[in-house]
Image (tube, rainbow, N blue to C red; front, side):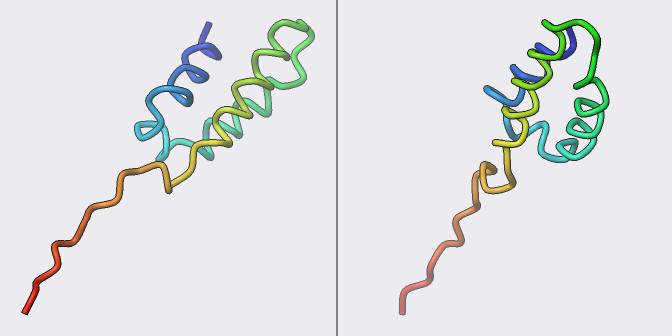
Length: 68
């Protein structure tokens, strides 16, 4: 199921989804009211996982300091 893929990416491979976070949340929110309960539950879990991904999860580049 696609929802499981989104959840897995958000849990394990956070950096690749950062540029798509708002789009993913928009789509997941549309499916959130699905008539099938297991789908709704999976979507809610995926939404919470995607919301946990933020730009600060990207590794920051270290700027080398020049000592005098």
